Image (cartoon, rainbow, N blue to C red; front, side, top):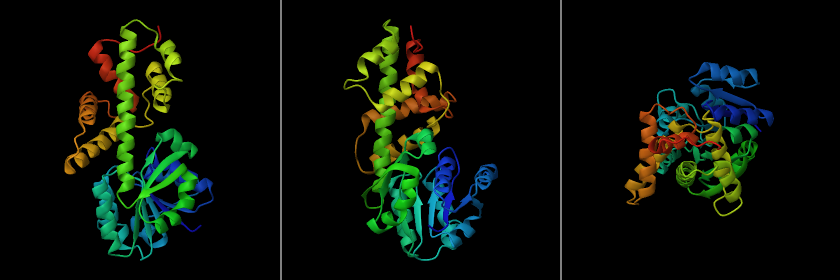
Length: 295
């Protein structure tokens, strides 16, 4: 394995790049937060500018706040595209719209540079232990080139079709995850206000059809009042906004997701953007004047 680039060392990118280092991959890193860079350098990474990473790394991973930032990193002044040779590959693991991904792929294709949209699911815990799920859009040959590295960061990496389909799969994931958290929140606020013990009710239903990974992970956080972020409200607010924009552009009504976006918008107004998305429960708690807690 040659040197790979990794751009974006936030709550997800930092542990993901560390897993590459643990897999004996030489990694050149960049982030606007130089403290985050220093953490990776102390673990054996090499710090570099965007131009240096573009010049020295055949495969470059990006995980950035949104599609606009991805475009700036790729195509801005002194961006990656200014120094990347033909035959290189960008693997964008950011949560963006399918249209952002296709735009990037088309512009890079003009320079004979490959592109995969490869967003991830699993939050910080799975980024740390290397068990993320990665949804990939692009060509089979580009996927095969990236797979040895993706395997160091994930439990599964699946090629779901052409460029843009990875981003679509991530948006599907976010509809289901955030919608499920909202339903769990509403249900257990109801449970508590009706006088039943949430833990006992959870024990009764968790092995039936209502059981899920989301229920297991998020109800515990709600009961513990632990809203330390593994997946911030801000990230999920942005993702659901991407769902809405994409759905409107293709004339696909998403009425439940529209309500979900307004719930997230309420949490934004309440200054909860840095909370974990388990804090969706607090929206329903305020409506009912009840806090979900063991009786």
